[in-house]
Length: 222
Length: 361
Image 1 (cartoon, rainbow over the protein chains, first blue to last red):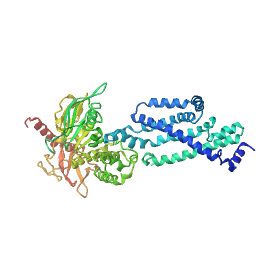
Image 2: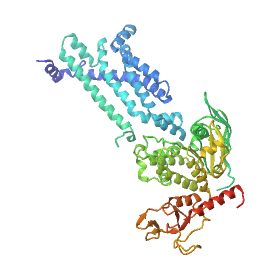
Image 3: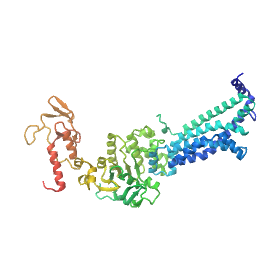
Image 4: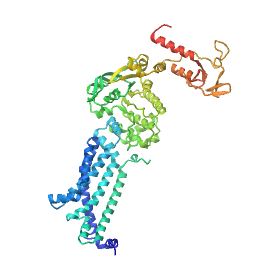
């Protein structure tokens, strides 16, 4: 029996799905960690990106910071933080937040700064305050690009939350680490399939949300 | 139109200095209420900067600007801006909002309900000649001329006595531009707002402005007056060169052609029985409108027409563009009313010139 057949057999076994270490509970853990990481990263990165985009200066700093963050190896960071702060949720969440900041920051910055300056100038000349320009013009126009950053960050975080299992936490990575420990390759494959499927589902949900929030006037297909 | 209008906007010693350059220097200017004042000049002369200082899109470095007697810094910039319409070169419409929502921007900012804003937007679409069917379109679906009309409607929605226009028609094609210019004159007659209109095109400045401020280099006003004054007596070489070589011709725009002798179509002038335009023959259609000229067997398209109340410039053009050298005058219904001789036009231009300088017949 090859690995894929064994993987299929594992999926087909109802016992794999239920219980404390079953697929459902790991899935919920995985979603929980990912949600927490994305929430923290978004609270930090989105306002900064939007603000820098609105001011239309300091873009170089944003691009530089995002580039530097992208270059950091998350597994290395996780090890570093775990040694520094100790085991627990803080170290991996911190490492993953740093991973998620880069796409969120660049998406927010690029989206807002790409709004046609003529439109912003016209809005200001009509008497919109700076806050109204941001909330009623720049953000609505930037929705597609900002969502691009959010989807990008979500994909990366879903894929990388698997490393949480490395320091004895849950999530879909559990099957990967545990499978590796006992040379059960089918479970490792299953872990990857589950993470990929979760990423695809979430991306589809976010694409739907993006479509709902974007004005029809912004799509060029008309 | 009132001869001595009240002042709507007054610049008093206004200077705008940037780190490296002076954009506008010590500007004193009283813009009359209820008229169209055009700011014209070469690029970099400070005309747009001066316009943008009125609604504080640019803050003056020195001096004060009074709007109906009130310092424009007395209230927050965004409130000041809501109190006057602003139209720019590219319409600058919000791409995520429909045409109606774009037009209703200022009423909505001032607290109008969605329904009231929409009703006002539809009204204004009629005013600027936009089909109401376009109300639910998005800006990306409009032509350049339509977008510019939406921009004008949005500016009118402020319901303010003052309208600022920054080269609003320079990005649309010439035919649409002429349309929009005529429309603006019509709107102005209807709404009687004070309009400040920036352009780099002297023809546009002359066609639209009741008053023209010619800006020279370094942000000074080289001359301020009526179009006629500026074309007739440019204050200096700069203004003379800016108003251009055609200014002799343009000046004829202000001279009436009503005194021109009209030669009857059937000929028989004082000189005798001959039609002096022979061998050319004027063709008329069934409704007695001019339909070209015939020369022997050949039929040739006619020239421009001289309409009732037309200027000497129109008369001269009718003469110059006519294959026979005789300008065709028409009545209000477009029917041929008579012919104009080129000598008569030149004589009229000469009389106008002599009377202007007060030199005897």
